[in-house]
Length: 209
Image (cartoon, rainbow, N blue to C red; front, side, top):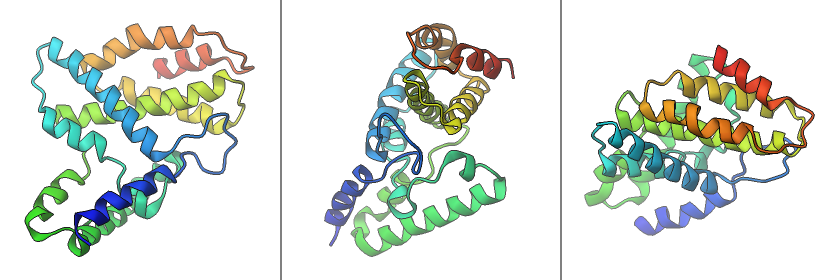
């Protein structure tokens, strides 16, 4: 089927819902998440450039736009489950990468195989682009969880998601993280809320860890 199989498979990302099994006021798909991560990463990279960093924009767009492609094969596994142990996270990653590689071997023409292996690889690493991807991915968790809490959703999973994502972000040493914590997060937390959950307190506790 060639590259058509890849293009056709992208539709499946619109049918995979994030945070499965939990009540949500707003339903988010993996496709929508991927688009938002690209937008966050673009702005975060601009902030880094303004602070003197050099960004490989081609790499950034490749890894951010494709970072969850493997969920076509394994679905959206809840973050607390996925990260409950390093061994489990490693096994899930191995399965995901193996299924992506099998898909490329079976469907992608030979002259494009190396390109697809590179573009669909795990993009989170210690490079500045990989770290920006990590921040952007966790930022979307923050925004998704915050939106649910703000609307009064009392599912504990969203409290955990919000707190854990903030903790992960604040421990990444980038200028864009400083900007997010100092300029963007306060605007978010100060928005009007109908929630019985004290979002401001949870935020302060997370940032104090």
